Image 1 (cartoon, rainbow, N blue to C red):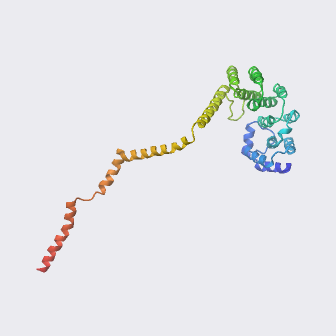
Image 2: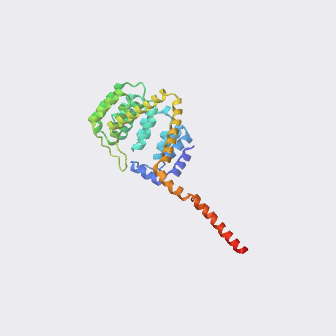
Image 3: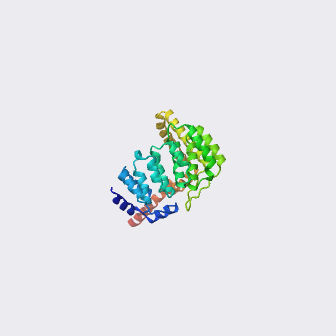
Length: 302
């Protein structure tokens, strides 16, 4: 698709309701109001097109900028590229989109550390989000690197700007989920930090409690491992035996229901209504007309 075709399509897909939602989340630049569901449809349609991504980012439109982060080539994402794009960051949504793209690139940790120290709120959010991405997915990074980040977070989080604070809190959680050793250190740091205040504007968004979130996520992870372990140890035939057992249980329940007093009481009136008269009464009923018929016949003969 050409730049003009994409912009025309974005304009068609925009809605007033989505524009209001984005505005509540701090988007002030021009926008069409395209949902992320529709942006993902366009992403799949376009594929990777780095040159188109550059033009979309330069357009200054919010929807075009988010789409640009989706179709840019991660192989061409380096320090110069991120420095160029981060210069136009002006809201948390577009910053989050750029951080997801930057996490796929080849960025040296020294450069990320440099951005972490920035006093600019959007640069701080971007950089700390990248540290969190490294904690979740970066292989071969020593625990010492994240231990130093925990010390920085504990020391500086309450004094940093709004969205940087939020990103630091999320990174604290990500470090706590990396492994068991870092989990204990992150929990201890989170308890000392306490509540992290973040202004989310006119939205229902909340800042996650690091202690609760780390404990919950580890419990979910452990539960999943135990379930998979049990599935591996049980033979395949065990699943097949469950069906007859359930069927027998249902059959037994139906039989008990048929024998229950409540069911017997309900059926009793029905049986009494259908009860046939006694044999003597039936015989008398049949014979009475015959006697009358014979008497009438004798009278006729006389």
